[in-house]
Amino acid sequence: MRKRNTEERIRAIEMHKPGIPRRRSAEELGVSPDSVKTWISLYKSGQKDLLDDTRKKRTYSKAVKLEAVSA
Image 1 (cartoon, one colour):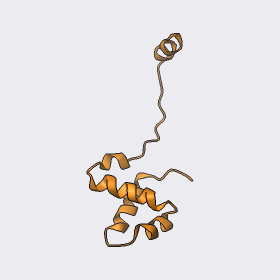
Image 2 (tube, one colour):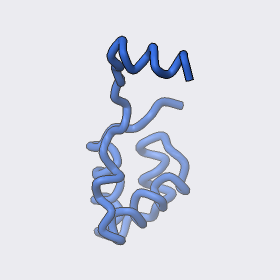
Image 3 (cartoon, one colour):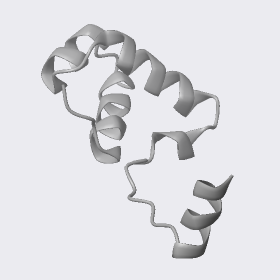
């Protein structure tokens, strides 16, 4: 199962607002109802920033890499 992007998470939340059951919106998006429940809970609790994509490639400088190896 692939990671969902921010737009898909928001879409699931928007689908739930007019009364569409979590299970139905989960089926349409191809995710588990528990995932939709988690996204809705994050949204309602004001933690909308946690819905953002987190897949970012991190790069480290040569100095940091050498320090990590020596530690």
